[in-house]
Image (tube, rainbow, N blue to C red):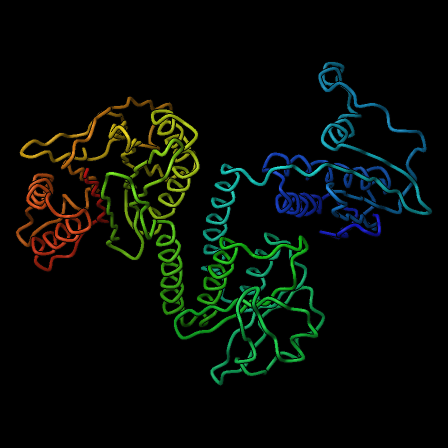
Length: 545
């Protein structure tokens, strides 16, 4: 590497093929952290893995007593990888030009395929012998553009899956040190960090070190006052000398019930700070781990409740952030929306998304079932709506989201949805109703139901849709709502019904949208007369001025 290179990863693994998966994963994560898309990151990891495999298979001839060193670094606008070994020397002749893959396959060639793939993936491949070392150097130009919306969606999906997978792991583990170590390993790999520690507070308010990675000794921290951990994230101040000496500059604190925990990190190899999504992931993993540390096997039921409460709280916080706290202003219209889960988290979503040409997308959807499983699908679907709203026509957008949801869950959960695109300048709205309760336009004494569309999302392959069109007139009030609103029951088990929603909105249509929404919710509570709601309730009111 050049002296000016910024090292992102240095990894030494034994010359054993079972470690190649570790090499692949770490290299892929570094590439994703440096503007490479998901496909390009996977290809780059494959190229580095192939070079490491070549060292194991040829330089060491399969012997497991050697070592392969992998270094990744930034050199200006290039991502570089050096794969070194001290095995049998490479042939000194220059590398041949890349072979034709189809020709290799046609000839049934057993060799040359790996090298050809590496040459096609990297911009430059150089192999040389320096002293006792074989060195294979790969270079690839960094992409000009940051991650696309599709790749951000994939990253969000990965974080959700990480939380679910760790939740399963923690639910079967009662060893505090192992739980903390699993949490650290997961976060360090995802965030490309070399040193970290997981701490909790003792009943006496002192620090207890549960696990550390990459730090030689944590003895200087053990027993310090919990108040030593000041600050949060990138603004951390570490006044105590032991903390400074360990070079653990970033502190993330969290709680679960009465328990306190913290994760300390060294600076990231990429040199980047922590994004909002990454901070949420750190806190979520920390809370999950802390919930699993609050007892022993004899207190399994108490631990299960604490962890479940913590997970639901994390999920509720994430879900609240996903739904818009404030809707964008639509010229010539008044809009208001609200969503209430019947459990801690729910499967309903709504959004108003600004589009090109001063248009707006309006979304309301309802995932089958309730609770945490439905909330995960809801988060995934919401991200999909956000990413695709400006990219596809409404019928194609709904078809694409249907396939994404169907492929993303194995429990055959589906969702009903209503998607519309409104042009305020013409008041024309095109829409697609995907198996959802028909929204109602209240126009004086007339009620117009918006039912054109198709089947539910995520249930059947190849689902297609058709779109409807309507022009809103001054004074029109559009009510979009989930079945938790219309199916609210009284103590006599009578349902509020779609008729009740329409009648209530019609009586209130002269009021602002927010007031219509508030009084509709009040009418639901009066109708239920204390009976608990059995489903999530979401309503969006759009009034043409």
